[in-house]
Image: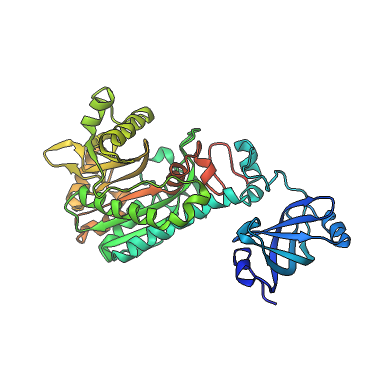
Length: 423
């Protein structure tokens, strides 16, 4: 007999079926006992009436892997409206008692316990639903871009130099010479615009920044996009808007299980210039960046004034942006770049890039950097590149805002931060 997933039991009412999964919970009453089995699709209730099977059940602890054959009976009070009776239980894998009670509706444990026992705590249905939300987000991201003529690429994570600045890279020994874990696929995705025009990548990026905050990770999943033949950064923002809408549409079926609050992505995301944003939040006009409290205030403003969970802040100062960022026409102190805030937190950085080799040479000279170190990257610009731009979304932050997580580590499968390298 083929295995039946617990979610499919209602389709086999009156028939025998086999479910396979983990012992999620055992409950023994005076005359009857209940076994709840968990598999990837949900939970199934097994009713045990005979004493011999009662004793068998007593020998099992939660998380034992079992196969249960029984007759499927309709029961509106059982998970999914069906349960198994007259069961035969076979142990497929023994288990020690789990470090937390996974059968409880919520995991009432602290973050260190949650992360220290991540291989087990991710089994909790509510925890697993969070990553299913992330996985659905990835499907929506890919589908939206595939439909718009983008090509998925994969770029090296071992690189010969830093992308943003030398102070935030992890150094590794590469056959006796130094190499670095890539801070982003930025240089490579720009090169590939010269091949495919429109590209995207899903992959890890690494930041050796000694942050110990609720919003930073040393390794996270970056959803990177780059596209050619743009007029300016507003074209990039328009593609970002469509991507977010596609992601939201794809995660609808997973939202309830994860406790997510789905945003409505407006047809046009509200935009405010960096200078005006500083004025709005009462910050020093010489500030080069927005502080977390500034972001939160801008998020409240966008919701109050525009009814939007999203707001784009454009025109960041050139001194705060990488050398490849395109200057703002008419005022080179600012750039054709933006940050997208989602519910008061920076989620996306994007903008238009330089595309002329002479502009790169000038930008590097102005920063006191030689072009030789960037020659493999600049090679593409020597041989003709279209006006282009792109953006990057942090997956864990995206999911954290959807589920109102108090710490981004709750949405990373195995987070890496200032203190954690295991599990």
